[in-house]
Amino acid sequence: MTIDLSSHCADAGAFAKRVENVNGRVFYDPTETKYMILVPNSLDGNDVGFACSLDPEFQREGLPIKFSGRYHAYSKALKRFAGDQFYSLSIETISPR
Image (cartoon, rainbow, N blue to C red):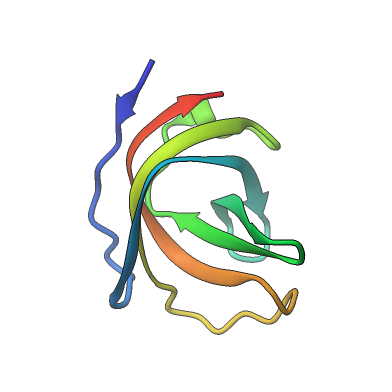
């Protein structure tokens, strides 16, 4: 089932890119107190999208999903793994994989 979760990200920066039918996994970041979706972008990095809105049905650690949405610049400078890119993520559609 695909759920439309389109939303505006109030704290999002400039538009970065749009993705369609991408596989990712849901995780919770206790530091940012937000759910994020990790999408591998190389051998040593991920696109990390902090979800502006995520339906409770998908708020499960490690849940594999398929989604479409828009990435925007993330408002905070985070230092984690060198290859990771951080974004605010406005989810348009999402479904379990």
